[in-house]
Length: 505
Image (cartoon, rainbow, N blue to C red; front, side, top):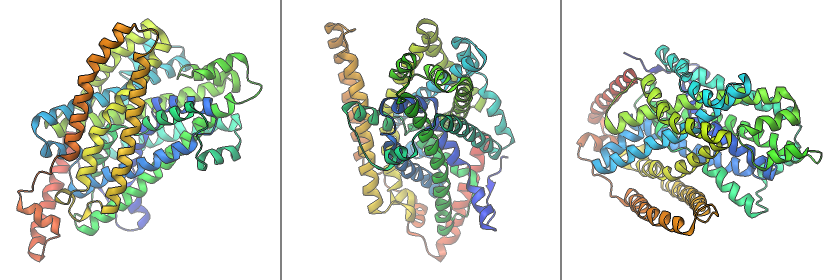
């Protein structure tokens, strides 16, 4: 049977090290190829002006991810399992399908980014790189048989590779440090395009499958199920997530600063200026090669490869937990990865063969729109569950935290809906679509919008399922001395179930 990761209480630094891992696995979603492309374009268009957006976005991400971790720590169950018990079957099936689509959409930039990396490093055709991307991640997933800690270390190394490569390129680009600091801490949106790109940047940060993943990863630690033990674990997971997201923030700053410096250079060539107008994961390599030298493009490709590999591993784990929670169905990780990749490879391969790199880049934009569409269906249940006394007991969100979370959550949903709506409107009103076709598309989209809003309102305002198990009431109230043995038995059940889940994963 797979064992939980033991937490050594003394000394303190060893205890802290025991909690390091889940936050880094989650942080790679903020460094995936789709986010890198958004960062590169933001720097090219607006120099360092949007750095404060990245700071604010990752600050919000830390708050949301910490709630996801708290849910897993306090209850011993992850988000999809709570959805399974809270909602009726039709809603659960819808949520499961939406979550699976989000995992698949998140895989698209990873597959295409890996294919571009192979092309830059080894001159492999893009379509061949897409096929290779479907197999090479299985090597990393093979590490999971040696325990979750080995995989966490491997992912941590890949994150550092991404950061090291971009920091090296940034050092050669020589960005203005004073302007970077101003962009980071002085909010400014000088043009309407800056506002649009800021919204796109925020929309690309928080991944819906990450909320399912973080709540599941934290249950791999063997912690004391007492009130103080849960509070201590939540605190350490918060610190670990803060460290991981801080590193992710620094890497995002480096990415934006590279193109911000290169594309704002007054002596930039005409060819490079054209690349700056519409940066893709592929064209960024040519831009860096022309502006900073061939080694810069190679480092960029290495970082792209590391980003794609680390992101797809965590995506596979998220998909496994989602399937297990909603359907109580288990699948081997390698088979899960292969199945997801086959679904993703088909449109990626068609796009690369027919339209080349430009079509592949457009597919990444479509994937970003899908993720924006999906986010509320993971975020709203998370906010409701972590504010529920029946589920969280003494560890539920305070009233002030609840107010802040719902305010930020609503703002995030509005931002994502604006990004999605403006993208759809731009597509419907484009000159390439006839008026009749645009009207027909709008008629088809309208019922989807109505259904979308109806389901979102249901998730938001649905009364909480009442607690029927007397043990839950004891746990929620903290119990008495007579309840201690009951609580201990319940905690042992949670721990045993967790070990079984890890064995299945």
